[in-house]
Every structure is written in C-alpha cells, then in structure tokens.
Amino acid sequence: MARVIFEYTKTVLKKVSFNAELFCIELEKAIKKLLPYEIDELRIWLHNYTANRPELYRSLAIVN
Image 1: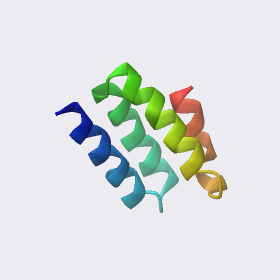
Image 2: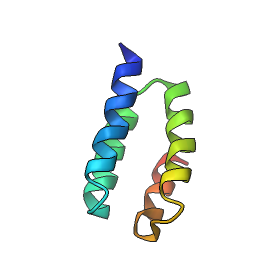
Image 3: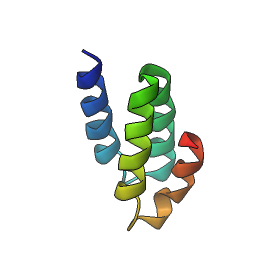
C-alpha cells in the first residue's frame, strides 16, 4: 500500500511542476504521508527531477 502512495506522489509532483509554489505544497503533503525510507527515495528522485528545473530548486530545502 505504501509503495502506491510513493508512486502517486511522484505522479502528482510531475503534474504540478509547472507551478513552483504548488509543487512545494504538494511536496510538504507527501512528506507527511510517506514512510522514512520513502522520503529518502523521494529526496533522490527530487534531486534528479529538479536538475534542469531551477524554478523548483527551493523544494530541495523542504526534504533536507
């Protein structure tokens, strides 16, 4: 069940990545729902996903 939430979180974040503020809001919601090891995985995914999206860099502070 938890894995489904992780995959859903990535899907939602991809869909709202056009708006940095909305992206951060959804990321904060996700962190509240995910397990600690999933947050670590999300952190890795986020670093890769935001590599070419400077407008989303501030979201990295949320997961650190």
